[in-house]
Each structure stands twice: as C-alpha cells, then as structure tokens.
Amino acid sequence: MKIRGAEGTLNLIGLVFLLVGVIMIIASVCTFVGEKKFEAKAEKTTAVITEIDRYTTGSGDDRTTHHDVYVEYRVDRQVYNCMLNTYTSSMYEGKEIEVMYDPVNPGNVRVSNYITPIILVFMGLIFGGVGGGMFFANVAAGGKRKKLMENGDRVTGTITNVITVTTVRINNRHPYKAEVEVIDPYTGEKYLYSSKQVLDDIHYMVGSTVDVYVDRDDKSKYYVDLDSVAADEYSDTMVHDYR
Image (cartoon, rainbow, N blue to C red; front, side, top):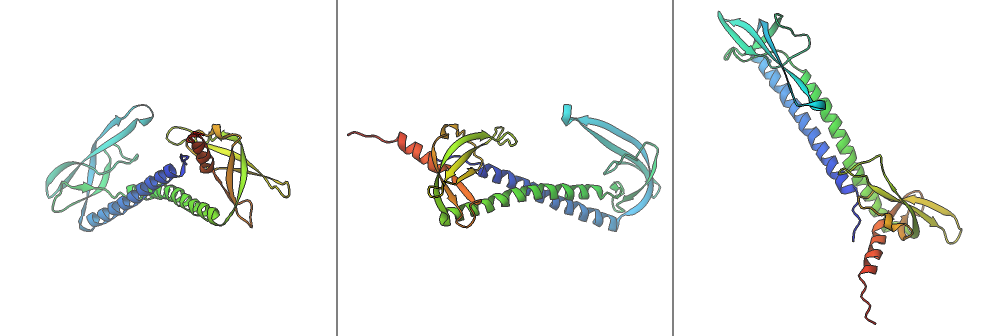
C-alpha cells in the first residue's frame, strides 16, 4: 500500500498553470503581430461614436459588464456604421475618435489596441511563473529525495503526531503531514522532523516507527519515508500464519 503524496497533484496543477501561461503569451504575440500588420496597410479617418451597447453576463461575483461600441464614418462618400474592436472608459456617445480601416474592406475598422496583448503577456508571465515554479520545485524535491535514499543514512524514527495542513487545499481537501522524532542511540540527542504533505489521512500512523533518510554531513536535510510505515502495516494485515 502506497501513501498518496501531494506531489503528483501539485505537478499537474503546475503544468496546467504553465501551459495556460504559455498559451496567453503566444496569444499576445499573435494579437500584437496582427495589429501591426493591420496598421501597416490601414487608412485613417475620423469617426463618431453613435452607440455604446452595455450588457452583463454571469451572476453574483462572476457578473461581468461588456461594451459594444458602434461608430459612423465616411469613406469615399459612403457612410459606414460598424462596431469597433475595443472599448475604453474614455469613450462616450457623440465623441469623435480617429479610427483605422482596411482600404480594401472599409467596413473593417479598428482603433490602436495594445492593451490586450500587454494584459495577456502580464497574465501569462504570472501563470507561467507560478506553474513553472511549482512544477520544477517538485521535480527538484524529487531528485533530492532520491539522492537521500541512495546516499543518506537510514535511521528509525517515531511518528509522534499527524497534523492537518489547513493553509493548503488540494482537490477540495486539506493534506496531512507527520511529525517525527528521531533519537540518536549513541548520544541521546533528539531530532525532530516532518514528512512531506500527503493526501491520505495518516492519523493511524501515530506511534508507528518510520524510516528517515538523513544527509551524513547535514542532518537538516532529510526525507521521511511514510511508505515504510504503510508497507509494514500492509504486510502485518496480509500475514496468514497456519502454524
């Protein structure tokens, strides 16, 4: 029986955040390039805002207000009434603004809008930074754990307490971690350690012995192997003695 650690879930969350961040940054670059290409071929003219249609979507905390801006302008004596590609708080009905239109398709009208790609880049960096940091930190922790189990000293500790990590919620539940006491049999010195966060309720492990792998040169570097307790518990329940 293997204890379910939180690393797998945290790795998945980190990867999702990282992927969302990368997608946002790619989208911002594509939006910026598209705006520059349009500006390179566009003509400019003056338009009048004829209507701002305000509407909301969602409800409660998810309620969002949207604005559709319609403008009127003239190209080669022909009047066009079209919707703009963006809205700003400075816009109001009757205001004159400079717009750009496609000379091949005058109904395609825009105003310079670099706010959207900037916001996308900013949000992408946040999501990518958080997700990448979470993912690579867990990968690094896994490497250190493997190194300790291969090269560290294995000592025996006792699980003295199991605490619920109320500051973290994974899959709508709080993880747990064990507090461990290790006493050096030669010096009598006591060392206190704690395990990684796990998803399974491990309160039943209180009082059990557990393997702890400790760096020979720095006892503050360690790994509490909760699976060693789980293996003992599982093997005890699976013994069939027919003597």
